[in-house]
Picture (tube, one colour):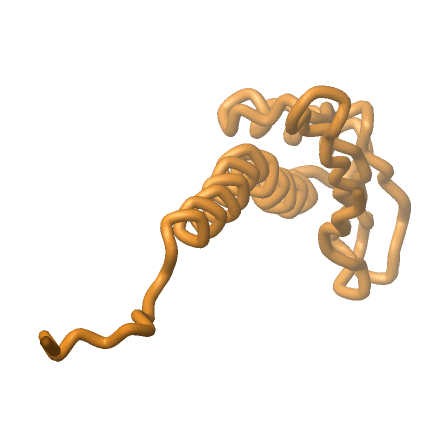
Length: 128
């Protein structure tokens, strides 16, 4: 007797579905941990550009950055951590810092952030 069912079924097995969901879950959790640090990095970039425009001396720029950091919930760096040097377009303000994000047990993710008001400066680097 034939019922018209295919003997070789196609589709995703239960184990395959579990593996895919586990990988998607790991990526999702990692992204949720990394997003706040990336958001803070862009807040720092905006704050140094604003501080550079507001001040003409290194002390003024640092003070302006500290005010912006307080309002913008920036905790990774302070005004004293900024590198301020004379440049072709006035002062050049730059920064660099690292963020360590614990993942599972001894495993963690290290993010190196650096930026500058100079147009030739790079963006964020991610290393493990």
